[in-house]
Image 1 (cartoon, rainbow, N blue to C red):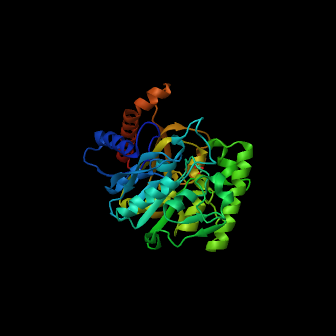
Image 2: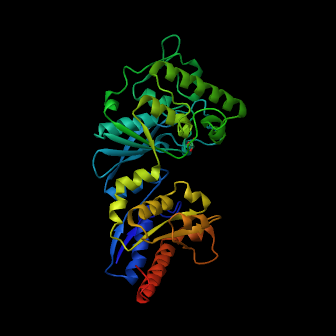
Image 3: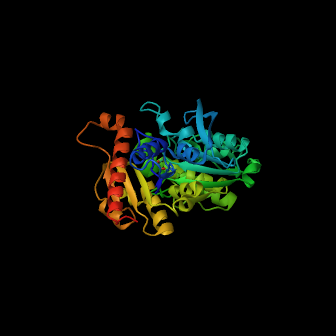
Amino acid sequence: MKFVLAPDSFKGSLTAKEATLAMKRGIQTVYPDAEIEMIPMADGGEGTVQSLVDATHGQLLTATVTNPLGHPTLATYGLLGDGHTAVIEMAAASGIQYIDDETANPLVTTTYGTGELMRAAMDQGATQLILGLGGSATNDGGAGMAQALGVQLLKADGTEVAVGGGNLSELVRIDASRRDPRLDKVEVIMASDVTNPLTGNTGASVVFGPQKGATPDQVQRLDHNLAHYAEVVARDLGIEVAEIPGSGAAGGLGAGLLAFTSATVERGVEIVLEKTHLRDRVKDADVVFTGEGGMDFQTQYGKTPMGVAQAVKQTAGDLPVIALVGKIGQGTEVLYELGIDAIFSTVPGVETLDQAISEAGSNVQKTAENVARLIRAMDGCGTAR
Ligand SMILES: O=C(O)[C@H](O)CO
């Protein structure tokens, strides 16, 4: 028997690698000699760096960068096993975890540290940068990131615009002549958590500004400033970014990456599927396990189990895909039509959230064991593949 184990993390309790190991232990009690391929997964959101590093035998690296409030912080990113792909979660440098009720102020928070992290990755020789967008404390359109990479955002008096989305109204001219030249050759791939445009009613400021502390007046100001920024980018660089889906991700960092780097947008889970070669590795498998902390109707929109199921069905036809999840939410029936054959909750009975979290590893293990027992019993009936 060959099992492929490709879960996401169980947020708050298990990393994807820990979930994979728990599944493996459960299966091995039933099939001690089974071939088991472990492919810890992610969908571009939190945990993507860890999963890709684990899956490709890469390494975690750190760099001191500027946090969204302008203070130095140590941020982690990943260099994958191929030695030339770096994975950066922008939140590691510029995330919402750096602010609290008192310091939240998207007029001044900056993505400068994300640009510094990109520079650090290029210093390590990375020629491909995968940027996970989301969970930001910022609303600066990626202006800080651009400045960290040498782009000059200039005011009427020729000096640099100060950091923060609140100051972008002063921008009159962009000079990209001193942009880090390595960016000419470096491929940038954006894995964004949302498809919002930069501005307007569904844009970065209106939809995500309030969660970063913007008052209604500040939301209007930030939206106006980002629209102005996009106009100057279009005029000086000839690139229209404002309407591109995902340009509004991470406070408009999506737009900045599209404007100042070679960035292309990809589905996060697709990037992970490619980097882990999941499609090749399931070809001769008998069953695939996936899963994550919770599953509901939203799972169909690009979450890991869905991405895994679709890749499996495209590559290996009717190869069964079984999902183990902490919590089964509303609307999961639709997933049976989309490639997931069965969903099992790993929680054995009524228990507190704390218990579910602390026992997540053994719960996943026991559920995997039970599913393996079922497979063995069905095999005995001659009904398994
Ligand atoms: O960071 C943000 O603004 C949200 O997560 C959307 O990308």
